[in-house]
Length: 551
Image 1 (cartoon, rainbow, N blue to C red):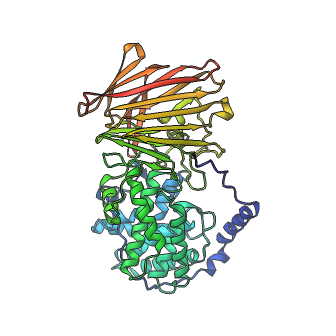
Image 2 (cartoon, rainbow, N blue to C red):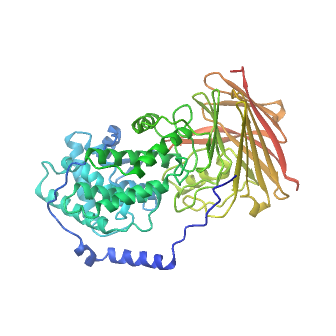
Image 3 (cartoon, rainbow, N blue to C red):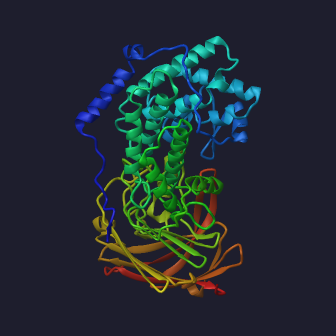
C-alpha cells in the first residue's frame, strides 16, 4: 500500500504573495491604525472553561527579568520583545503573552506589578503592526491571555493602565476580527480561529459572525485530523496540542451552553486512540517530526477528559505509523514521507525510522527535537542520522531547510503489514535516496508474539553510494558493549533486563549521541552503528534483538 506520497511544496500564487506584501504595508500605516476601534472601556465577560498550568519557578525568574523558554533562560535586557528576533518559536511565545499564566497565578503583589509592567511595556513598543507580534494567531493567543487574566491586571490598577489596556485590547480585537487568516495553516490557523471565536463569545460588540467562525473552526479540526486520528503535521506533539485545544473549545462552549459542533466531537474521538498509538508504555510520546516526550500526567489528564477508551491502533496508515505491541515490547515505526512545509515547519528526514521500548523503559530512541534555539541544533536533530534508520555516505536522504523543515521533494514510501498467530511482519520501502544515489531502502521488521525476538532486514537496492550506516540510538539509561569482534552487542536496561544484538552483513561500532526528550535537557548517550561498504550492488543487512532471560 502506498502511503502519504510527498506532496509538492506549498507555494502561494504570485498574486497572493504581492497581496500579502500590500497588506503588511497597509497594516503598518498610521492610517490603518486610525481605522481600528479604540475603546478605553470594554465589556469583557469572564472566559469560563479555559485553564492554564502555572510554573512558580518560571514566575520568580520573570520577576527577575529572566524568561524561561524551551529549556533556556532569556535575559530581558532593554526589552524582551527585541530579544532573539530570528528565533521564531521564542518570538511567538513572548508576544503571545503565554507567560502571563505563570505570573498572574502566582498570587503575589510583586508578580502582579511585574505583569502590569510587562504588559505596559509591550503596549508602548508594539503600537504598529509587525510580524510576528501582530500576526493573527499571535494576536489571538495574546487576547485570550488578556481575557483570562483581565481582572488580575486591571483590578486596583491606576486609570492610565486600565485605559491603555482596554484601548490596546480593542485595537487588537478589531484587527483580528477583520483578519482573513490568510497564509496560516495547521495549528496556527486553529489558534487564530479560537481567538476570533472567544472574541465573539466574551467581548461586547464583537459577536458578529460568531456562527461562521465556529463553523470554520469545526471544519478545520475535521480537515486537520486524519481518518485514523493523527494530525496532518505527523507530529505527536502537535497531535497532543490539538487535542488539548479541541477539549478547551468544547469546555468553553459547554460552559456557555452552546451546542458543540459535530466536527469538534469527531476530532476528539479520533485523536484519543491515536495519542495512545504514539505513546510508549512509560506514558510519554514517541519522538518523530519535531515531537518531544511531553508531560505524562498532562497526557493522562487529557485522555481522561475525552471519555474515549479506544485502544492504540496497530496500523495507522493515514498518519503513516505502524505500532507493534507484543508482551512488554512496543515498537513504533514511521512509514510515510515527512510532512510538507505548509503544515509542519519542523519535519525530519527519516522515513522508516523507529523507536523501541521494553515495559516502561525506552531502549532505542530517535534523538528528539529542539524547539527554538540555534538553527544548527534543529538541523542536527532533523538529520537522517539522528534517527534509527539507514544513511548512505553520511548524507541526509532529503535536504534540510535552514532553520527547520524539509525542502519539499516528491518521494514514495510504502509499507505492508502481515499478522499471523500473534506474530507481526512489516515490509516497508522508500526511494528518497534514488535521486542522489539511485538506491531504494527496503526495511523488514518481525516481532514474535511475546515480544522477545525482534528481527530486522535492511536492504539497499541499486548500484550507487560508497558506504552505509544504520544508526541505533540508545536511551541514556541503557548501557551497551560491543562483543564478538564487532558482530554483536549487549544492552542492559536499568531494571536489569538485557537484550542481545547480533548482526550479519555489517560491523558494529559505538559512537557518541545525544537525546533531547525535552528542550530543557540535552542528555549525552551512545549509539550503535551497523556499517559496511557499498560495492555497486547495494547491501543486505540482517540484525536481531533477543531478550536475555525470556519473558
